[in-house]
Image (cartoon, rainbow, N blue to C red; front, side, top):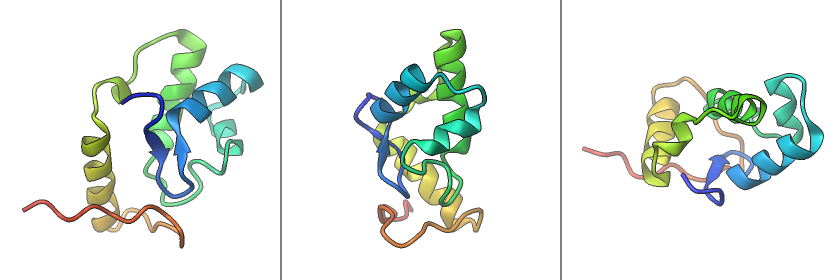
Length: 100
């Protein structure tokens, strides 16, 4: 996924915002990335990816985000939400249509 793609669909936070926040604030733990626009505090889908962004900035390792397209990421989030694992807050990006 490119830097302008959304990572947090609940609060509309892009990968670029998260990467820049991590560079500037140097968080001690991944959960501090939630201070960037509330990322990770909605449905919970993006939490593993916030951890990856944290590790990427700390250790310079590639992430799963580098392998996913924005459409694949959105579809996986939709599957997560539809399976009952998280509830997006009001104002979150709507889920894409279910794939058959």
